[in-house]
Amino acid sequence: MEYTKAGQTTDIPVNTMKMVLVGGKEVLLANVDGAYYAIPNKCTHLGGPLAQGKLEGGIVTCPRHGARFDVRTGQAVGEAKLGFVKMKVKDEPSYSVKVEGTDILIGVG
Ligand code: FES
Image (cartoon, rainbow, N blue to C red; front, side):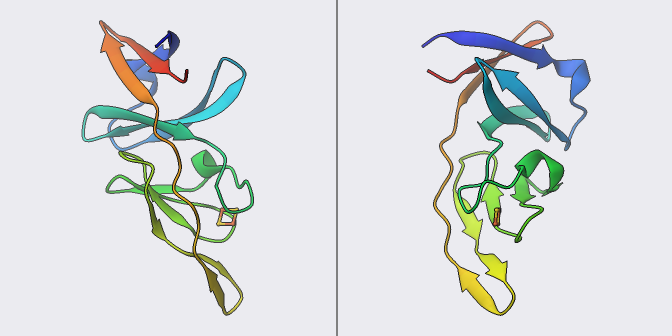
């Protein structure tokens, strides 16, 4: 797998996240208790920008309709809600992340 530099550890304080571009793809990079995780920035429901949502305890909440994903695995852990209608959403893939010195590298291949 090919890894691409996505940022510096100093860019992402503990329990925060940001959107980074890796090979032209929007990726959500999160720091959960000092470990780094990456999933697509695009919500599997209707493409909401996950990095603009909330991150709590490793769970990101989509800013559009509230679907929730575990950033450590990509697993969908909460449904999207449109008015009174709740909809199941698909899991996100999870990208592999490694840290070399202060560089964060993501493998999206
Ligand atoms: S786009 Fe993310 S919950 Fe609808």
